[in-house]
Image (cartoon, rainbow, N blue to C red; front, top):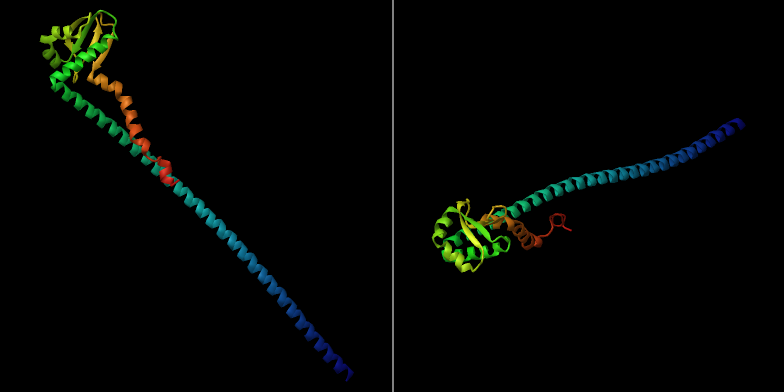
Amino acid sequence: MTNEINIDDLEKALLERATALSKEYSERAKRSYDHYIEDENKRLRLREEREVMAAKMQADQVYRRMVQTEELQSIKRVDQLRWQLMHKVIDDVQLHLKSMTEDRKRYLELIKQLLLQSFNLISEKKVVVEFNSNDYQWLKNQWQEIIKSLNTNKSIELSLEHFDGMGGFIIYDHEYKIRVNYTFEGLIERQSDDINQIIAENLFAELTPVRSNINGR
């Protein structure tokens, strides 16, 4: 009888111990599982954050490349527009000067003014003035009257040589060592930088800088 009671007690104790251990290990396993899940979630969040950051950085790089490309294209378009306007202004000036030569009275007054202006650049008493062939034919018969109207003490010779151009003249000293270009083409060339600057100041100075406009800053 005693042996049976001891066995029963032992079996009961073993079952109770097994139950307690199983509960303990079950709780340990649950805690380990919870820690594992928590760690995995952290790793997943970190991985997701890294992937999002990498994707954002890649997107930023793509955006910057797009902005740089668009900026270069915009700068190119602005430069093209500036040069187109530059040539348009010069073309308009040329048309204006050409139309001026058709108004003989006005054109003659301009020639006289330019002649007087050129005398200040050549100190020699004797000078030679060269025109294009059309102006030479027009002016040769009235040249002495023109010189007389200038009221100058210079000796002004009308050259038999002619240049190719719209109008104006080239004036030399008598030995052809000094040359002053008062042709329309020469006047336009000397003013080209000023024309370009005027275009830039009056048109493009009011434009928002390309970089700021693209980036929205």
